[in-house]
Image 1 (cartoon, rainbow, N blue to C red):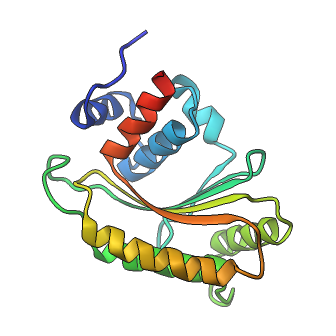
Image 2: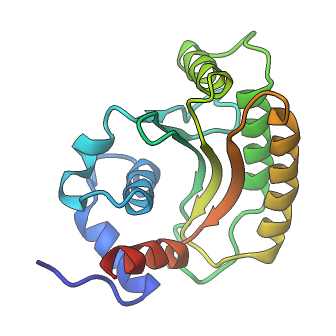
Image 3: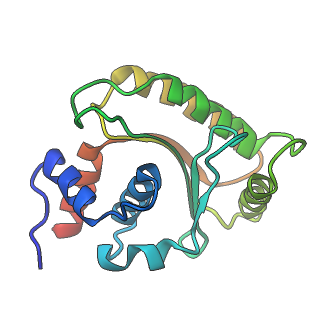
Length: 195
């Protein structure tokens, strides 16, 4: 059994060593982060998440790249991702990606289904149904990236979190949170898993 990464940079190396290079790196990084968050076996992560992770990235994606729905655990993760081609942990992430995450909150919780791609419409319908039935206890909106943790991003995410909580206040008992997910945070999840 290989040892766990000791730093965020070695975590990035581990990710790159195990990822499917034929698949988009953003998708692979989203799978990796979700697997660490849900404490899944990394050797079987593609199988474990195949029925939960929906790729919504593309034209008219409403600011949402990936949605992971785990109805058994009552959790939904909505992910806006950014992978910089610069070395990891060397620069601030793109702040404009938080604006896309704000769009994802509005679209998923309140948006009109008109002009939606069929796959994004079906995801929005499912999420709203699960929320209305109180089948979801935890709803998280992530800005996932491989760069430095940024306080400006956190400020934007706090505002988005407040908006999201207002939108579901009378519709669901779920907890809604926003999160800046960096290599450092994923490493902390790994350390918790190892303890």
